[in-house]
Length: 82
Image 1: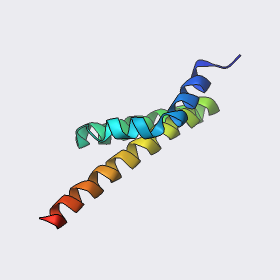
Image 2 (image 1 turned 90 degrees about the horizontal axis):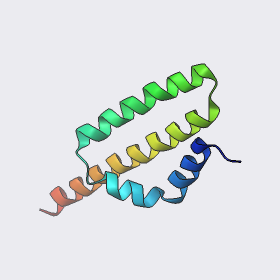
Image 3 (image 1 turned 180 degrees about the vertical axis):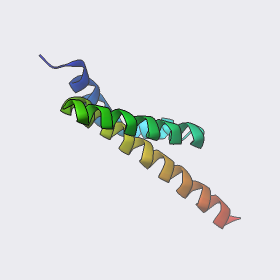
Image 4 (image 1 turned 90 degrees about the vertical axis):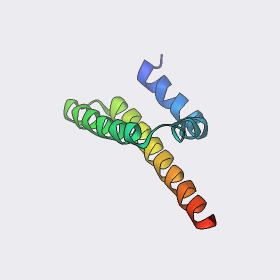
């Protein structure tokens, strides 16, 4: 039987594009804070040897970073087009 963490990771991977698009609508300060929180939790999971939690948090962090970069790229493109 799969753990809740495994199911969440599968969901995060399966729906990554949708989650990234949703995060692109969020304020950058919130995204930045989420990345900080994920990194703190990743450090804790690593110290505890909780590989599943670490992998899930890593995926969340990566998706959040991608959302921030995509958002920034879109903002730069808008400025260049003006």
